[in-house]
Structure formats: structure tokens, C-alpha cells
Image (cartoon, rainbow, N blue to C red; front, side, top):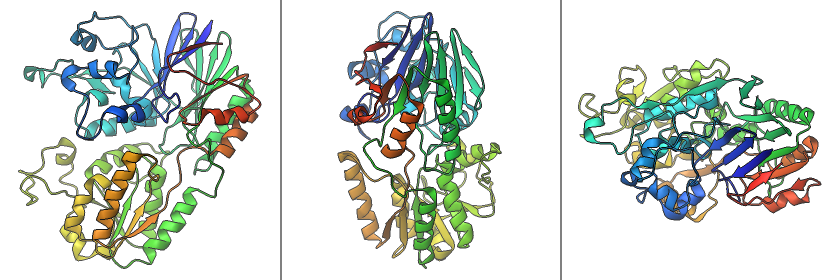
Length: 471
């Protein structure tokens, strides 16, 4: 018997945790953080308590309270008995937090199957992040964590890395990962051959990106598999097809920046290698230096190691790295910088300060994330241009941050330009794709609009969280 149980991603965007059982084999498809559920209880300065281990997460339903999947140290910390894992693997579709981060809680004997590029991204995240319970995907420190144990080596997780069309055998399952296009490189869908027939999991994907040929490869393989079920994302199932593309981002952003003789500031998700390539290209064509942060450098250097991505190293002639003000505020290299990911790069030849940029603002294009907008006080980018290459706000919390962002832009009299294309497939393309795959059953997740799928001539399940569906 084959069954699917859904513990996240139900009537919400992200947080996928799907348990697939086939005879004696059990695997999870992703094990991500649900930003929606987490945001109901927590925000920037109200966080789950590390001192309570997974207790806050259990109590508030942020992770499922089921046996045989969690770390022994976390269970013992809650006064429970340690358990041997009953799950043989986690298949990770891509490295976004809403699919990957809560692997942090899983038993170290449960191996993670990941694309090679996704592992590089997780390495970059790990290098420049402070350790927390929610970000111990690659390795973890046993809890409770006493001061005497701070220097002990963490427990490493087992990662099995794949490329597209590799054959993965886990118990009774035969699995084929197929690349798809998304807003992060190294994203995959899966075709999973079970004792009852093939199951297709889309992960997150799109048709309008630079690598739509990868998604077409996936769709073609899924059609040929003749699946008994498809588990599909539906982030934008309610939205019609538009002319959005990476090309439109390039054209709109370049036009705005070309007409600007003052400061140029851009903001985009640095995991998005296509968006980086777009702004790197614009910088070259406009004869500007692209200024990135030390955190960005961690990602860029991992991408540079993957020759298929064709990205430059962070020491490239077209790139500068912005040295942040820390501690004394004097740029004292010995006194001010203790983070390892910064210290190891302080000898790079292309480091620059905000004051140097301020002296010749038209020469630079600064990548500046919202959380570092206070750097504008040093840059003083008056009457410049700001390119917002991220999704527009879609909930109350994001609206508040967006309003605060606008206050910064108004203060410096910065022109606001929205230039973005989504990492998720639109409703028109998605419905066409699912119709062509034509599964016997459809399980829509990662969506706030599951009823939209009922317009298709496919048996569609309205999923309930925690319920098991037999196939």
C-alpha cells in the first residue's frame, strides 16, 4: 500500500513536509519552515526559545508531533525517550528555507538527498549565519548546549548528492530527480516509482525563466511516466499569464539605471543566480562596479565553483565588496571584524567603503538588502534610483516593512522602480502543464487557493493537514 501524509504546505505558501509510505519504506519530500504558521506567533524580536528546544514548535504546531523522526537530544530535552528513526530519507527539492530549514530537527541518521547545487547554497548559508535551532540543516550542536560544549564539533548530517536523471533507490522506491527552473539554482522535481505506480512531485517551478527548457524536460518525463498522482505547487494558480520574464527585468532596470547620474541601489534575493547575472550584466554594460556584501560573496563563490552556472568569483574586476561599519566604526580590521566569513576575505583586493562610494556614486551599483538600509546614512544616495527586484508585499507584516522601506527612500529622495519576475509558475501555465501530465489524482500544496485546481478535469484532493491519503 502507498500513502501520502501532508504535514505542511496545506492551504499555505511553503512549509512542505510530505510523508510518502510504500510498504516498509518511508521518506519525506522536503521538510521546510512554514513562514505563515511561524508568523502567526513570532516575529523579528519574538522568537521560539532555544532554551525550550522543540517544545515551542510542538506546542504551536510548527512541526508535526509524530514518532521516529526527531533528534534524540531534542526529545530527551523535552523529557521524552529517544527514538530510532522510522524514515529512511528526506528528498530535498531545493534550498529555499520553506523547503529545507526544518531538516534541522530531524534525526541525524535520516540521510538527506539533495542536488549538488542545493548543497552549495546550504554551505553558503551555513558559512554566514549564526547557529540557531532553525538553521542547523548541515550539522547541529546537541541540546541543551552548555558553555563548556561550545567548542565541541557539531554532529554532521549525511548528504547524498545527485544531478538530474540520476537513479536513486531507497527501499522499495526508485526515484529520478529532474531539474526544473526556479528562482534558485539547483531546483528539482521528482518522479517516484512506487509499488502502486509513479508519483510526481513538482517542487517549485516556473515556465517563464531563463531555464524554461529544464522545466520542459521535467514535464516531458512526467508525461511519459503516466503517474497515478501529482503533488503540485500552486503559489500563483490564481494568476493569469503575463509578459513577465528575466528579460523584462533586465530592460526595465537597465533603462532606469542608465538615465540615473546619481547613486544606484538594487535589492534582490542573492540566492537567485539569474537575477545576479541580470544586474551583473547591467553593471558591465553601464560601466558601473557592482557592489555586494560579504554575505553575498559566500553565495557567489559557491556558485562560481559550479561551472554550469557560469558566474564570476567575488574578486572579479567588475565587483567590489562593501566593508560594513562594525564596533568602533573606524574600519579597524583587527578590532571590528570577528565573523569568520568576513575575516577570511579581508585581504581581498576589491573591498570598498561607503565613503569611497559616496565620493563617486555614479560609478557604482550597490546591492543593498532592506535589513541593511541604515548603510544609506553613510552612502547618502540622495536623488538616486532604487530598483526593488523582489516580490511585492502580500501580507500585513510585509506591508509594514514595505512602508518603512518607503520612508527610507523618501528621506533620500530615491526613485522607486519595481522590476521583478516570480520564481513560481503562473496559473495559466500550471493548468496547461497539469493537463498535459494528466495524472489520475492531483494533490495541490504550497498554495492558498487549492479550489482553483477543481476547474481541471482531474480528480483533485482538497488536502487536510495531518491526514493520510491511500493511493
